[in-house]
Image 1: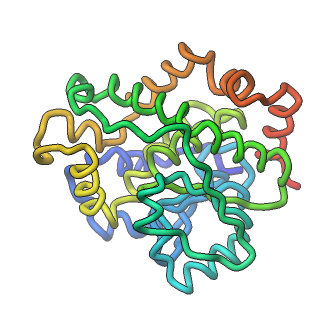
Image 2 (image 1 turned 90 degrees about the vertical axis):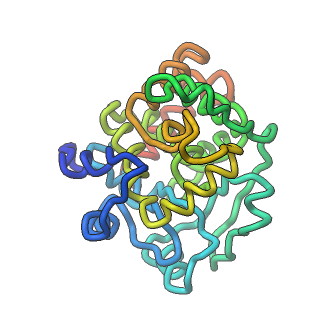
Length: 281
């Protein structure tokens, strides 16, 4: 569980527009300090229990970008220092085929086929405002398409509280961000804490920012980065997360109701999940 105070310089840096480079001397001290964890060959890796204000216990739930470039040192950090026992991979079959996760000693790799392929984001939906409409629809699709993964992760929290786990996708910001927001919500985190964790991926992805921008151009079939809606799509803003949360509330009655009605968890299950996320074991 982290201190509730949110360092304003940290939030300010996390709000940097993705079109602007964050200088190395500004992002490196952040990425080598909690809640981030330095894992050689990975990026955007952090402990959800060390995000300022987080109710989660430290050392249990980790999130990250892709792991396929892990060095031997990076593997040793995950296996030893962090004690990760299970990795959940949220990527598509195509993403995994190009860049499979490495084997880690004593670590269970879990990948579950999504209910259907992700849709290609429609940039027209991201043109207005800060792209809130597009984000709401994109993340509502994510929460639906990956429901079998969400269920498996929550079952892990319920049944294996002594086995630290890590969740990742490619950038570790959208699919992984939805899951992190769900875990933080179920643990009782404030909206400010959840949004801060969401925005921290702006700093966490800075070392691979240009690569991810190219990935986004290809994935959206954009004519260029200047196409209307593109920069709203690749940016992380509090307004986008709030629009998604409003969508979850309207569509499902909130994250807890989603876990109950759509994933099949009982009130007792959800109470156990909250306890296991927050209480020392």
